[in-house]
Length: 116
Image 1 (cartoon, rainbow, N blue to C red):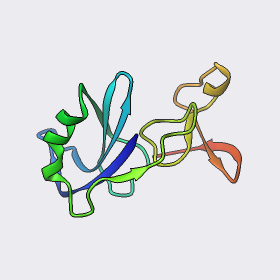
Image 2: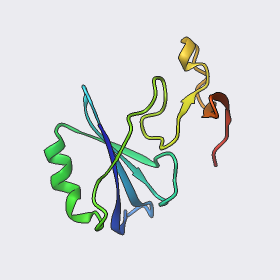
Image 3: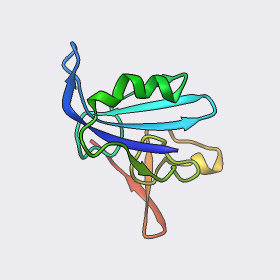
Image 4: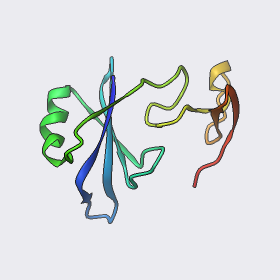
């Protein structure tokens, strides 16, 4: 299960980083919370692991804007869990990951993906 939400106001940390959008993703290991520093960001800027969905919701629900939690499909196999688009580490699908290099699925074909 994956859901995302926008915060009512950006959460600004002491180091100057901020969070304005979040995504939760439930796995066997726990509940991942991905934080995004831009409302249009495709990949997260930080992540956390929670033991339970209840713990995550207790901490974040009051910060979420009126749109609430929005369902999103789970990632495709080998794709990044935090990405809103089908993005994967290049070579991961064949067991030879090229860490730091990514590809994106566009019109049924995998292409190199570059992000800032």
